[in-house]
Image (cartoon, rainbow, N blue to C red):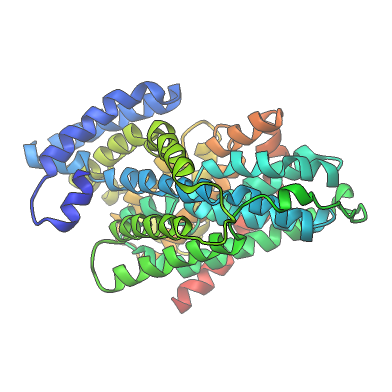
Length: 449
């Protein structure tokens, strides 16, 4: 509420915001995994230590603590999209469309990736459970090796969505670190995401279980006639979110992240309102379903969106402290000659480092923030856009390859397979090829954008 208030009221509420952020971090730290708890404490203490090298002040500490809280606010707001999705019964719309129009493993694989990619742009981690629950039975009817099919389709489509999606924290973290706006990152990252989707389909279509002839599934007429909104509404909502975000940014109404936050709030209100005034009786009773979905958001959506709040308080304090410390100056002076000699090879080295450290349990968000801050402080000849794209590509590969990544662990749990199987065994070839191709494409995109 304080973050949203600061967008419209010309008051400096940084100290109050910092106090609330510390309270949220203290209350939420117990909900983090052990590795995230340790990382949060280490980053927070290290950040304060770095700040102390140039002198501590109340305003400086407060600014450091809240430097990445706007990412948490964005994620909490994006969880509001669960309300219109639930009210409009879009899960049923997706399943009905699949039964009517999608037949055979190849079509099913494409459809699952597209739905996951689309939903991940607004629902983040909630997408995984929704897709596997509503499409799981249909996938099993079409494919023998349903576990690998589901795991590769969902993990690849979801992580590729983090390249550009307004509901993803990674791209906004990278934007904050590299000072490259989301509007400038969006189109190149969207192109890289689409490249990844095509590559994923091409690589998987040659698997044995993809060669089965399409089977026509009889339509469930009872569920077909059951009230749900049109699937087109879901697509239009995502497009409207992107367009409104761009309009707010171009008119400098707010920063990139705040613009997406405001756009998300407006789209949710308008979308939910339009569902409430439908006159064709295609939807269930509006008010009871709305109340139920709002209660679900209050009890689960807020905590889901803010699940990484303590971590962002810690990593925000660290990155701000590093940027304003004497240590950064010393590190930059030491590494700049070495990195300058690497030249274009640094573009390939960045994602490799992000992937390697993720394999030992360091979350890509942490490595992206640290590596990005170090490199940006060096003022080397590489374009900030290219550095941002390289960090983004590395984070995507790390999300897919690390057995410790949240998306991998969720998919592995839902499909009852080992995390290492989902990440390394089933995705390493795709990640390797995607990393090389996307770096080449990123260099070309840098010349255009």
